[in-house]
Length: 356
Ligand SMILES: NC(=O)c1ccc[n+]([C@@H]2O[C@H](COP(=O)([O-])OP(=O)(O)OC[C@H]3O[C@@H](n4cnc5c(N)ncnc54)[C@H](O)[C@@H]3O)[C@@H](O)[C@H]2O)c1
Ligand SMILES: O=C(O)C[C@H](O)C(=O)O
Image (cartoon, rainbow, N blue to C red; front, side):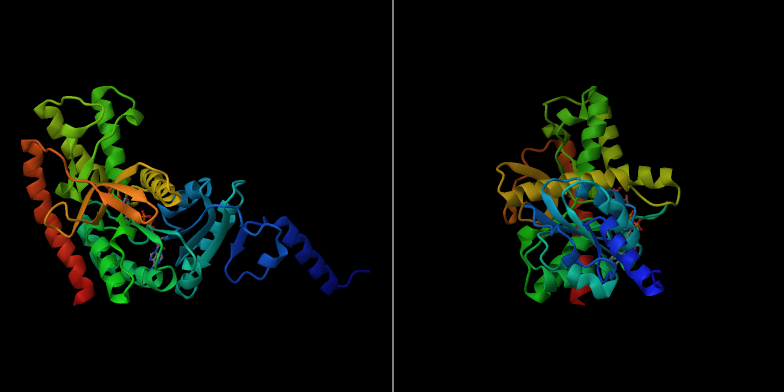
């Protein structure tokens, strides 16, 4: 007759074999890495998502698990990562998934990472601006970036948390303080503006959005989002009414979603899609692919401001080349002046938050 202790040991042995080898929670006693045949040694990059249990974090984690360039995926949040990690680890794709819960596990979540994607922080509710998120999200971004400076100072950082126009300068100041700042490796994610611009322009022109390329420059809030409709590919012409409609719709795209969600939050699914599109471009750059170009909010000398979103070429070191704005029409020149005015204040607010 099997004793109670023997039965417990037998069940533990069976469980260890039933659990997928690519699921691990930091501190888990059920399955030790040593018990697994899979060691996560497949070629590819190590990616961490900070804020992985959130509205963006979950679909982003799912899509990154599907990315063949990712060999190891670390999911960090202050809540709910055990469930998200268990769930995503059942996907039969190559990346090994590990979950990390709470501040004491931040260091392990970050150690050895090539790319860190940050969608941690609170989202907007109707009636709020992105700047209204500053008070909460600035502190979150500071803490996470201190962790990056300590545990993976060479990682490329994709910063999604709003207000991006201020959180990127905050991250830069944290890295400067730690002595690890490399401007090429810190990228504010403005890809959703490009994704929206491609979609809305394609709608107006009657084209497939996948054939359309709209540069969106400036920053990521209201008038700082500046679509350059005069530079759309394929080359096309817009009436003044179309230009006004498209510019406003692209600038207010985030608010359109916030209002439609009516208090539940802001864009999550389209953002996860955009974040993966951008992260994939960063990974292709890291791999050494030639000609990887996307828009991003980065340290820049394109204008007199210290940060600005333009097209950048992504390479082994991050944003290796920053492209100039190119020829602007009168409408865009006026938009640029408005964008710079608001951006300057947002950047300064971020810098002061750390320097004060
Ligand atoms: N850059 C963009 O284009 C863009 C687009 C959409 C949303 N956003 C921003 O992304 C952020 C997240 O949006 P969401 O809809 O996923 O919000 P959410 O509230 O659904 O998820 C945020 C997650 O962050 C986690 N979090 C909070 N503090 C943390 C900390 N200190 N460390 C780690 N994780 C922490 C929360 O637990 C939560 O799981 C918001 O600031 C939002 O405004 C940016
Ligand atoms: O609008 C928001 O608050 C979220 C995000 O910045 C967006 O553009 O959808």
